[in-house]
View 1: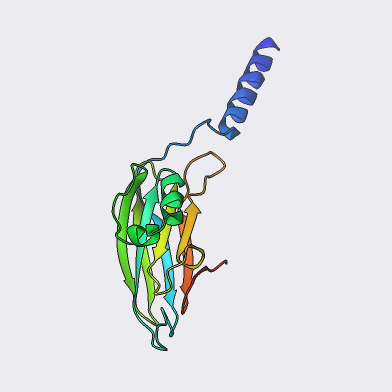
View 2 (view 1 turned 180 degrees about the vertical axis):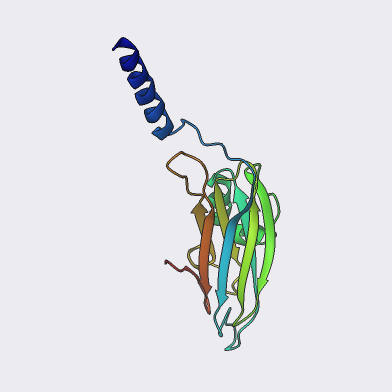
Length: 164
């Protein structure tokens, strides 16, 4: 009887420990963990009644503070479009170009330490509200980073997230 009780307690402890979240997620490198789906409007980046190509910069970030602070500064959005490591929180940056009517799917490896993805779109009318987006990398029930899919519609003068 005592042996059965000991086994039962051990099984209960094992089962609950498997279901509990670990205290800290491990933000490790993962291949193809971030996928961007982008769709360019026929009137993309409209300027003087004509559509134009659009430059985007995608950042992998450890935190959003530096990204948000730079986006709020005068000339900060233009600086973000340089796709450089403006801050120690940047683990990766990549420049993309989207044409009017183009659909683009970009698969990226998540860099070690990246908890967020920040995107800047170089519209002629460059404003934070319409040109800047950030996305947290989701966590699983086991507190592990999950894959992130971002769907964006890039219109005449703003970037919109498409919800499923």
